[in-house]
Amino acid sequence: MSDTTSCGFTSASTQSITINVTPLPVTPSVFTATKEGNSASLKWETTMETNSERFEIERSQDGKRWINIGTKYAKGESSSTLKYSFSDENPEEGENLYRLKMIDKDQTFAYSRIRSLTFDSNIQASFYPNPVSDQLFLNVKDWNKVSAVELISVKGQSIYKSEKTLNDVIDVSRFPAGTYIVSLRYIDGNNKSYKVVISR
Image (cartoon, rainbow, N blue to C red; front, side, top):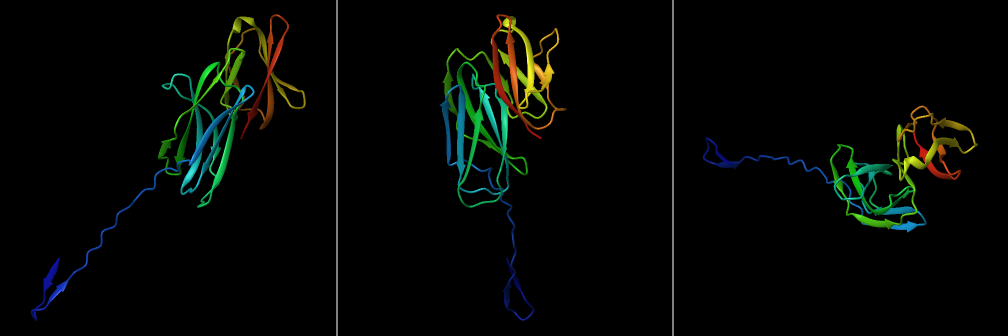
């Protein structure tokens, strides 16, 4: 835009326009899923992190219904390579699909590519999320064969034991942070133990 002064000179007026650009959530440069026994080992790397808050690890068996099985918080602002890892100690029987939900501090988010692992039928139970902070969900292959569920600390102390009615949810919100063992007792006398982590 130009203006003409009273002396006949033309002067240009400058207008400034500010454009706010919101950076997209961080995207991992590497995301892998590998089997380690009956566990799924997930690893990913980022080459630059700005405004990143956390990564939520999600799992699905059909690609439609996804559940959050854990969270890793971002390590902070960085322009160098950062490495993360997560272990799914209780995958489902059959195909397991994994993806990352990358969430920024302003709560915008994006998803990673999907990775797939298949586990055979010897898996009798799975638990999620793990680590857990409030409610631990139990997915048992055949509840009719289970007589009791017990949660045991690493010191061997029983801090939860099912009563007559078996529940597929354990409220762990009142228990201290740490590593625990979920013990499934079967009617035939066998026991199965699984590791879970309570985080705060």
